[in-house]
Length: 449
Image 1 (cartoon, rainbow, N blue to C red):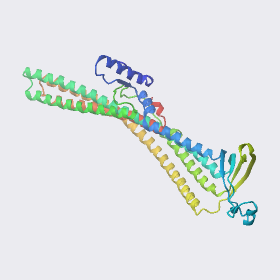
Image 2: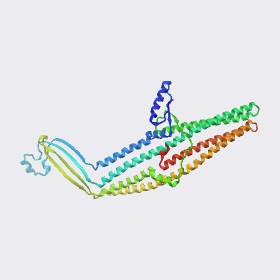
Image 3: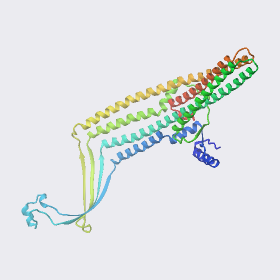
Image 4: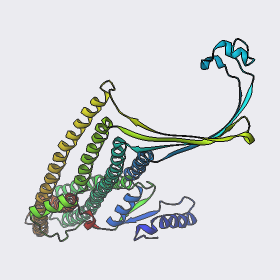
């Protein structure tokens, strides 16, 4: 059996385990994948489809920014043309009587002749505030895409951490179910022995058998829930389903420093990427609006060409053309004003969203603090409840062994123990889930692993 303690060697272990299994049997068993919370998060950040898609969106935004920058750069092109043509000189306004003196017919059509033209042209935008603002907006779009990718990474981290906790809870429930079944088997053996001794009745044995079958049913449900929880975790990791997942961590109580709400809120406002991303979206909307309004301003362009032209390549002569174009927008049918109105509305929308995001961050921080404090107390109460339930079971079993009472007290105590175990598992899960939610609300998910 091979074990992996880090994700760096994860797939090497998978391949190695699969190869070893294939050598041992004709039908290779599923390779084991042993994951800690740290390994699970690292795997998700590398393989989760949402994270990978947002990385591609950064490349898309960068391409848009490069295109916008290209509009401000020189546009240089060249061509070589060799053609044979005829020309109707009458179309140039030459009188018909003049054409006859040139030896042309009444139509003014020349004889065929060759033209060779090799030329390079350049177009350079000298000034256009609209294009400049459009480029700045595109660069801000890259920042937005990068921040959104970071948000996706953090959301994925929190989601995987919660799914890992749910899988730990499901495994703890299976272990508790095994313990409950084992306890029922021991108490059933006790009832059968007491019946043989003539102290207990067949009803006592049957009652314990019914209780044991109920515990077996609960165990089967717990096993099914565990398998489903692991499948959900594998799906979030973005890896192959054909693995046997083993969780390296345990569901337990860990030390968490108590923080004042205003300190946590201050840290959240400093660290939460959602706030930074929304502020950048506001900037993007403002720059996009400025790009449209700047279309009202004149723009200046330089145009030039240089080349060789003649009847043949060897008989060509250099010619050039240089010019500056000043464009002044006058009226476009109201299209620009419509886009300005649209842009102003988008700026207002982003401002509204900023308030909503800020309120959401505050809500998440306060909820996380409340649930963390409550779940910490629940763990202490549930552990004390389990101790009392075990004591109750011990006393009931002693009374049954002494023949003072039947095993109704025993089965009732068993039910209390099973419920107390479930309470401990649920309290530990709520505590660890609260840790994850608080770390996410505060923008410090890296403290989890």
